[in-house]
Length: 133
Image (cartoon, rainbow, N blue to C red; front, side):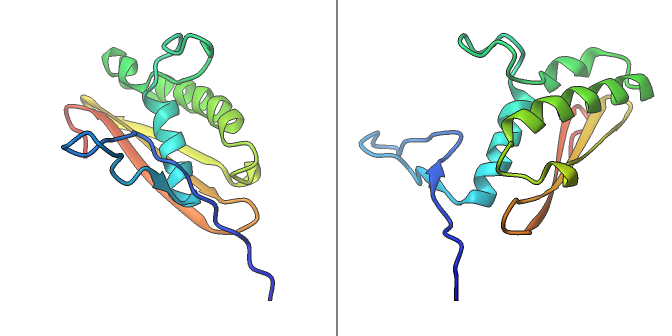
């Protein structure tokens, strides 16, 4: 029986133990790694990374924009572009679904996808603002 290997990846965010002598759980499996990559894209502001200024969607910056359908559509397009590039090879691009909505002072994002080669489906919800869940 052929078994697909499940490699380990460097965990995000990287943490050290209280003693500072060694990393605390420094690796994550593939499914966790993909979720960590999505978090990095959502919460990194454009131009925050010196050598990759185009990286990031800056979700926290959108909290102060009018929380309406126009913002949601723009955010969906921005996220689809950013996530498609970052998750290339990890996620089946045809299965990447992004849903953005909000209420009052909270902006909610749901990202659903299927891991390439494994067929494993996942969905994650993220929220920013005062009504964050």
